[in-house]
Length: 109
Image (cartoon, rainbow, N blue to C red):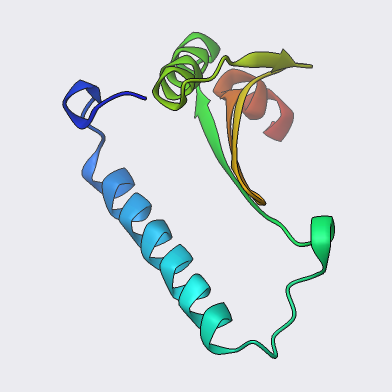
C-alpha cells in the first residue's frame, strides 16, 4: 500500500466528502452493532458496496484509477468502456471506475 507521504494532495471539497463518508461508515457500523434486531442479511447475501466514479478526460480518469490501484496493491482492469479497480474487505466492497467525461457529455446532449 502507498504511504500517506506518497499520496497526492486532493482538493479540499473531496477531502471533506471523504471524511464525511468515513464518518458515515463508522456511524452505520455503530448503529448496526447497537441494534441487533436490524437485519443485514444472512451469509453471502449480506454485503455493502460503494463506488468512486471518476469523471474526467479518459486519460486522466484512467491514470487516477491506476494510482488508486497501486495504493491498494491491486491491478486495474478494463470492463467494457470502463477502467476499474476493486478492493474487498470481507463483505464490504469498494471500486473506483474511470468514466470519460466526454462520453458522459455526449450522452447527456
